[in-house]
Amino acid sequence: MRRSKPLPSMRTAALACVLAAGLLALGGCGARQPVVESREALATVVTITAYGDDEAAVRSAIEDAYAAMDEVAAELDAYDPTSALSRFNAQPYAAQELSALTVAVLDEIDALGVSDAFSPGLLAVSGLYHFEESGTVPPPADVTLAVRAAARFTRTDPTHGAFMPLPEATTDARLAPGGALAPGLDLGGAAKGLALDRARQVLQASGAVRAAIVSSGSSTVTLGTKPDGTAWRIGIEDPRDPDTLLATASFEGSGALSTSGDYQRYFEAGGVRYHHILDPTSGLPAGGVRSLTVAGSSLSGLESDILSTALFVMAPAAREAYAGEHGLGMVVVDAEGRTLLVPAPAGSGMALAEEAP
Ligand code: AMP
Ligand code: MG
Image (cartoon, rainbow, N blue to C red; front, side):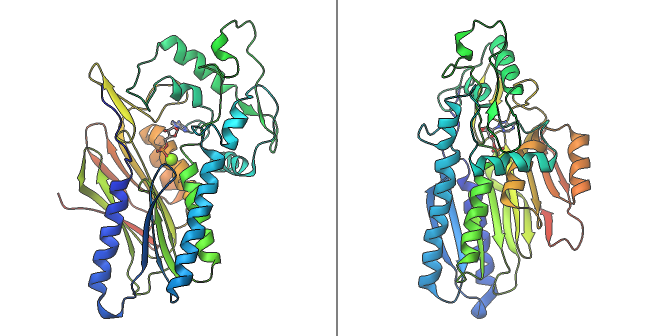
């Protein structure tokens, strides 16, 4: 068995910075220098690159942006026992008010129409794999029980808390509050994107930042157009070789990109890779894909984060149909290592280009 890599998202962040810096250099004398700040946030490293005329005001906006991201993490991190979400999860069978941020995520899952692939209730199912430790292959019967409980963990009304009565005739103590199979919300597939949106809003509202790129590695949002007029460029790494770029996304202005991958949290047992993106119907790691990147100039960070996870889980035909209908760019690396690039519509403000091998 192998431990999942620490801070898996840094590489893409670093690539994004390198590309941004490279373009700056090419931009020559007219290009204004951005303020670049990298810090631990959202359990990874988040880099903010921001352009503005008043450096002190830009730095102050960046401080506020990190504070906004920390607030989202403090509310939505299901693995932080002090978070609002953890307090909610401690009472999984009681009708409770959901926090505004939780409602925002659940509403977005519904609005995107991806609830078959993106389930916010997989906390116990994920927990069975112990990804944060050395990894455990769970007994299939436990996975089935946890999946069934998760499927019944739904909102009883649009603004009210999730509520699930105890399954009838169960004597399994693990389904009781605090038990290993007790249902709970895990918004780990969406929270970073929402946090990046909050950071972008804070930077924009400051009035000091004219253009910016905020990246957590696996998710990136852009704001406005760079002062030298060149595109924001974000590198998409090879899921089996982080030193190699497979493709590049170029944004003319605002947009968002997210990558979900089987290399971000995983362990191997018996020659099988058990990774953290689970098929909600089986509770098993979703097959067929090594990494999936979705990008669009009209996407918010929250939308792109939910979609990268959801499209990863979907069957190939369904995901391509979804990307086509919604005008999304997509880069998929399948289980055989083949790269499929689905371009966004021409003139959409975002383009994907495959790197020469
Ligand atoms: P991401 O890296 O954005 O794809 O998010 C992966 C994380 O989302 C996992 O570590 C789990 O916390 C959670 N997750 C895993 N599978 C799903 C799923 N099918 N729907 C929603 N969240 C999931
Ligand atoms: Mg996601």
